[in-house]
Length: 97
Image (cartoon, rainbow, N blue to C red; front, side, top):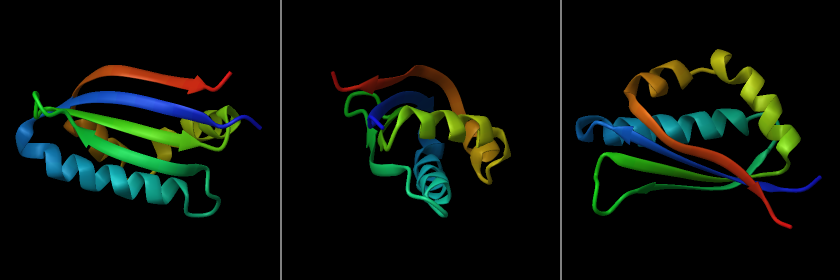
């Protein structure tokens, strides 16, 4: 299995930033509840645009990503988190070569 890194950038209204960060942490904890598939994560707020958040996640494998992608709509907190996202600016997975 080859680990991969996910980068996702979202626009979130400034009034909802703290809630979006809290929900993000809850979603990540839920994903790892039964089996750790996210081995490291960071949530960043852009310094010159307070409405942009970035997830940087390290996954155990692209297979783990695909498994969670299939479950995503059914996970607790995801609908609430998505309701706070005004725009998905960037989303991608990278593997080291």
